[in-house]
Length: 92
Image (cartoon, rainbow, N blue to C red; front, side, top):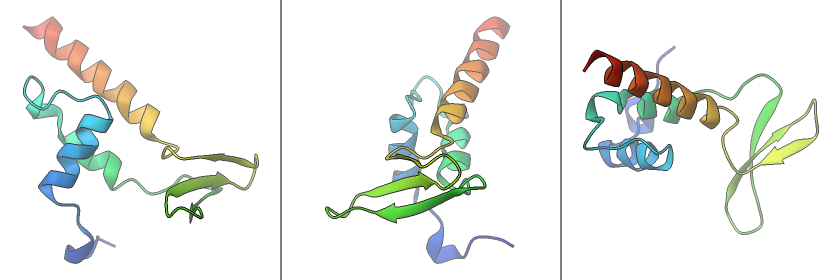
């Protein structure tokens, strides 16, 4: 099942998310796809999305009772980006 067109992130949203993930938009424009994957990533099992009193999204893990304002997979995507960047630099 795909994402409805109206729910697809814009190019600007993807670029903003890339910056949030520490992806260099100029030097690593070929790796911005990682941000697109991340912004569309579903929550892992046991996690749910909520909104606090100030309107900020946060995530809650029902198995561990941990909550965070960062998507539970963001660090995995940052790590993947660093790995891909390292592979690029080794080929250069």
